[in-house]
Length: 93
Image (cartoon, rainbow, N blue to C red; front, top):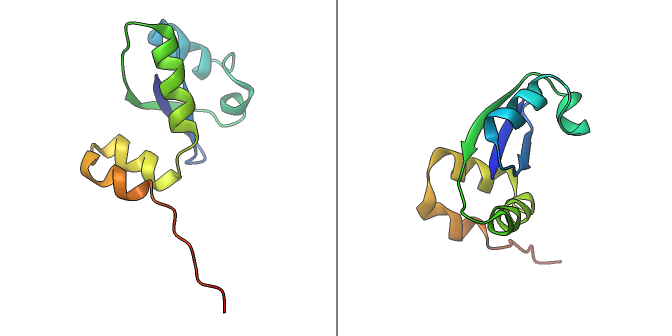
């Protein structure tokens, strides 16, 4: 599972069996449509898994995260992740 930072500052989350090949594909415009429009990209985070299904599960999990939570993961601020998972509700007047 990996996270790329795109030229526009957005993040792309994906998974692959071969990170070097996949990164090359993204940089060459042959990766996802999303990244091909936001070149260049750089690898900012990755995790390795024994099973493809585990990496895919983690990819989908992180895709649902807020930008702030993704950035905490990238920076290694693991202690802040649980608090960032909590939804903030505003009181209606």
